[in-house]
Amino acid sequence: MSVDAATVKRIAHLARIRIEDAEVAPLEAELNAIIGWIEQLSEVDTTGIPPMTAVIPNHLKWRDDVVTDGAMQDKVLGNSPDAAFGFYAVPKVIE
Image 1 (tube, helix red, strand yellow):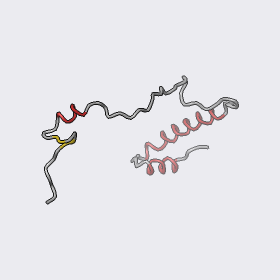
Image 2 (cartoon, rainbow, N blue to C red; image 1 turned 120 degrees about the vertical axis):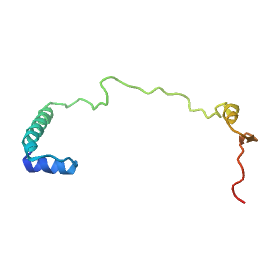
Image 3 (cartoon, rainbow, N blue to C red; image 1 turned 135 degrees about the vertical axis):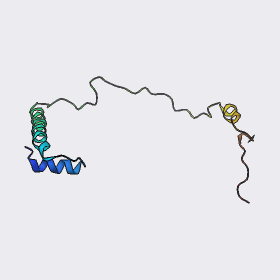
């Protein structure tokens, strides 16, 4: 596959990038080189190689999922100008 000048202009339009006519030829060469490298990668035999997300094995550390109240109610309510029954107390807004 190769990229021509019309394709470069279309890609620039879709990407909302303004390019001048003098910039089309260098971009065409760069895109064709990138596509050439991708085609070289497709020639590599990867049969029997599982897909991976990282080069080293990463495992998430698991912890027990325990529901707690955080034991911080007094600290949180300490920031409140008024608290009642373990909750923030606010003035009535509906009459």
